[in-house]
Image 1: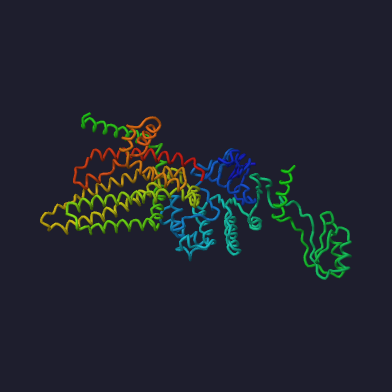
Image 2: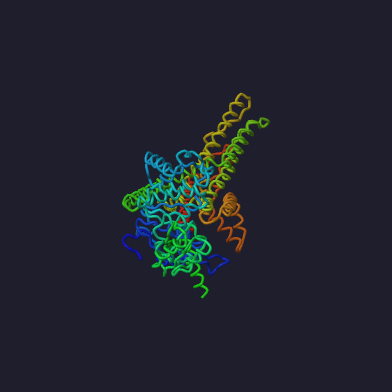
Length: 316
Length: 299
């Protein structure tokens, strides 16, 4: 549902790839309705071939929809005023490989009409933001994957965009690189940028995103905040020490306890009212309580569940 | 029609165009104001990229060496030597200039799409026609510089050779350097037209298709009079095909003044002007088509 604060919107967006060998076509994006609000970090997650990158390419005007429409800041992407306000980080960082970071940023800044002195300032600022100051003269082709990704992010930020579209920003990065990229995205989020992010890395999505849309076979099969998608916590997990053998069996038989395994006592959602009596039972059985958690399902759980449900639905 | 009337029509035509442009300034000025810097930026990066390509550097060095080595043909008479140097030098400039045009221009757009570098450009405030025009202008600049270097080397060779043989009693070595430069400039015009056509093909197809297409167009464009003669004697579908080729493919041989210059014959300036005007018109149409097709291309 679009509101006044909607920055990006798609209406029944559909993309069918047709070729000589597939005249019927392959539906890459199927009737997609998406709305990203101002200031939020929205992530599209989905397995390979689910239509995430195709959606981004349509939004950016690189390919054209078979049906439906999309708008950014209430205007079509063909409007240059829209493109002045967005930044795009393509998957796998494709930039001119014979130029170094300094030259690349100068070029991309020039496309926004900045003067020479402003371009120089921007280049310095952005290289510093992405931690590439020391490697500013290294040609793109000689950069490591992490350096390339950081330069690609810098070019996406060259116009201080209001909307940032990131396609797999941490793809192919090592854990340190992923951490650094996540840190930069969080910093941009702190600066109230609207971010649309496509990613495979669900842990990273969980860390940075306000809302998530799960795409599968070109369709948006689930959407919402992590809490909305995951629902209420379904159990309480008590981590204990010194609980084994007959003492563990004693606790396992207590009302509300679902399972006792490797020192972890699980209480079902219905047995939540029994928490205090279970804790007392653990103490009486000679165990000590280390931690009590009421975990929500992870995005990974939500993702797998949503895809499984959709597949079952499809089979029906 | 007398030349005076022709000139008068031309002046009145230019005046009308000027008035229309001035009156409609508000319509086109904002687009042009935005387009010029974008086109220039893309042209500059195209030049910088081409300049760093090893194959371009290698071909330029090879041509320079070929031109310099031509001074060693001292067993020929001065007149023959002069003819050979001018004809051979201009031929080298034409052939290698065209080859470079194909290898510079044919790769520009398809490679941007294949390497996906185009994503970061078209997501910025750059219109697709500005991208096409920037690539074309960039190609023209780099090819212009290369042709200028080759021509300078040829002129240098001719001057050196002139100095070497001027003391000989029957020396007829007296190259018309202005005519040589003129012929090289006309070669450049032919290359500019062909480059526009290459940009059109590359806007709608892959690198391989563009390279193959460019070679075919070069061959067809360089023997248009032969194609015209063949069309005169052909019939049916083959005649139709030959007539289409004759009318659609640019007449590159109209830009070729090697024969006149190397044989010290007078150059037809109206012929050259006509070729240039046709070339400009043809290139404008071709670039408009390239922009239209590229506008709908999925990248």
